Amino acid sequence: MKLHIAVLPGDGIGPEVIAQGVKALKAIAMEFGHVFTFEYGLVGGTAIDAVGNPLPESTLELCKKADTILFGAIGDPKYNMDPDSKIRPEQGLLNLRKSLDLFANIRPVIAYEDLLNKSSLKKKFIKDADFVIYRELTGGIYFGDKIISEDGNYASDSCGYHRFEIERIAHLAFKAAQSRKHKLTLVDKANVLESSRLWRKVLMELAPQYPDVNLDFLFIDNAAKQLVMNPKQFDVILTENMFGDILSEEASVIVGSVGLLASASIGPKYAMFEPIHGAYSKATDKGIANPIASILSAAMLLDHFALFEEAALIRKAIDKSIKLHITTPDLNMKYDNISTSKVGDFIEDFINNPEETNLNFTNIHLGQSTII
Ligand code: IPM
Ligand code: MG
Image (cartoon, rainbow, N blue to C red):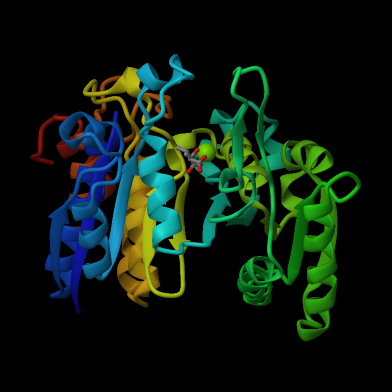
């Protein structure tokens, strides 16, 4: 298959982690005889620094003409401490999502058996947790009217949803549940918010079309608790934009590191693949950023184009890296000096030599003797 991929490294650790995602895709292309070409674009704080715009027109054009998009990370702390700043890195990502109509953000959460000890939650509650969050991505409070009064003493953001915005992602979530454990949980705040009541109403109306899906409802406050108390009860979680942002970050506690969670942002025409984590600026260029979320995003990209065998091989490589403790310090329980690119090298090597022995991999990637 030929794929022209727009690569948007973004800010902070974005460039380091995305380089590993690209490395994995190149290895897959070589192994399976695909032709993947990569074209880079500016976005976020780096784009502001370079051209004064977090989403330059050229980047948007690149994304539109490419077959798909791999995204790194966004954000720069210097803007966070300047509430008056009119221009912000995050606008790059938000405008991209909106301009490309990427309304469904799919965030799978699977607890790795070998990392159960890394979670601050008790093993017995998280073992076998396996669910997916369908987060609405182009509506709600993120994109509602924003007001700041003239005197600067009042501000508001409004949360609104049209029926069609709820319906289109609800259909995807129902279908996902049909292909999984047949359970769909809508997370909302319908006891307080009018917009949540519309979500509930629409979901109840659609439910008869999916008789094999067990639909239930949770308020966000309760869901936030249930997610860490008993994550195994979930299969598909559907929720609006901001609740999904918060819940998915919370879900990273289950897997042991936010550096493990990837996502697909899907629209009618375009698709973008992005880690759920931010730019983690403190870690920039230190080689400590976990590249797995970016590499998993690459696997989700392959799934999107029905390259299932290829995606499975990436996941197998990730499993192996975790098993052999070839991981960055956020996860490593054995070695303290495995860098971002080292993890990427391991994944690449595994893709090229999936039948290699554990011993060989350990020797090679820990810089020990390669002769066994
Ligand atoms: C995410 C991020 C973004 C969001 C930020 C960087 C704008 O937190 O993708 O979860 O809030 O959507
Ligand atoms: Mg987030």
